[in-house]
Image (cartoon, rainbow over all chains, first blue to last red; front, side, top):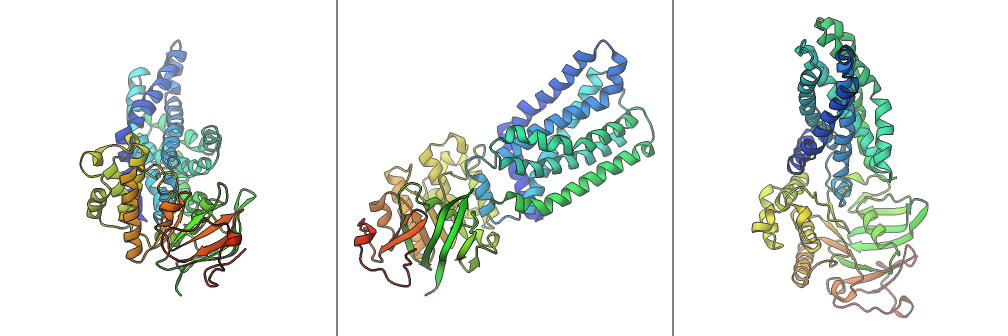
Amino acid sequence: MWRDAVLVAGKDLRIEARSRVATNQVAPFAVLVLILFAVALDADRRMLEQAAAGLLWVAVLLSTLLAVHRAQGVESAEGTGDALRLSGLDPAGIFLGKAAAVAVQLLALEVLLGVGVVVLYDIDPAGLGTLALTAGAATVGLAAAGTLYGVLATRSRVRETLLPLLVLPVVAPVLIAATRASEAALAGDPLGAASQWLALLGVFAVMYVGFGVVAFGPLMEET
Amino acid sequence: MDLAVHLRSAVCLLGRFPALAGADLDVASGETVLVRGANGAGKTTLLRALAGLVPVVEGEAVVLGHDLRRDRRRLRRRVGLLGHASGLYDDLSVADNLRFWARAAGRPVPDTDPALARLGLAGRLADVPAARLSAGQRRRVALAVLAVRAPELWLLDEPHAGLDAAGRDLLDDLVRSAAAQGATVVLASHELDRAGSLADRAVTLAGGRLVSDPSRSPGPLATTPPATTPPPEPEAVHVA
């Protein structure tokens, strides 16, 4: 399973490195979302500062949809999904590999967006340790849930519109918990202040990784 | 007789439509069988079912010793399917595609070099992204993937489509070579002369059922309608 996961993750990251979809489309989209929020709320700088954490994670959430859509899209074009099933790779390994590739892209994006929030919203960066833990746990949960529901949506002819409908309600707890934990970090509160939100993010991540390892194989199959 | 494929009254549904509606087919290990039939007869579904990609919902279906109704997944590593789509990642180069599928199949990466050379893909073409290839070149890469995987059962759906004359000769050589090494081959084609020259015998699909098995003799196959063909050999023919 782990060998297959590394193989699939390497393949997906190589595809992204060659196609540059993440750098040329997903990242500019996410930054654009931050800029639009800044423009919309610029008259009230205090509100912008207060909402910075939530706006950051909304931008991450929307970008997750694009990244997941892209990750599943490469498996639905040119019969690669069938080829993947015929390859004999462990479906759990495929899930872990694809989720890991999405997670790597999201982490890079979160760093970029973090810098964007500091620059655009004039936020004083604090609590970097808590922010790093929040980003790590939230990213694993988003990537796992997104990949799992992404393969479900792939089977549909209306996957472009179905994917947000499936994913956004499910990852609402991640948005809430990551926002609260980030707010605590930016306010300079100790790690303990964000612990319950970090725990929620951890539980969500573990649950969806486990769920994906078990369910991804059957979801890949035609019925 | 050691059977690579054994179907009895096999039914496969596409939605609610029975694309295979009680197909009977036996293929001996090492045999090359041509499946012919009109568009929509069920040829592609038959090949996808034999690959374990489409579930068999009724009847018996055993491929390479795996019961398709119970255990499709473990069969797949032993089967190679050349379908209408190439199965290539557009953004990866020819060589990267081949290396990935070789690793996925547990084959050594150095095995990809002879396959690239054999299919005329070595040199400059190896570094070209699959998206920039012509349809015929993509077909060659897909064949190279099959050659590297070296499956026990080759399932070829219109394998000559899109290939130029040289490519068709390469394909024929590849199939004959695989058969000579003991692989079983089932190919579906409308090009009866070309594909027939590769096959030991032909069967005809109509309405999701095998309706004839006119010949076991090698060489170009007769295209006589099933009703006028000689009686088939009992162990290989099952009129549905």
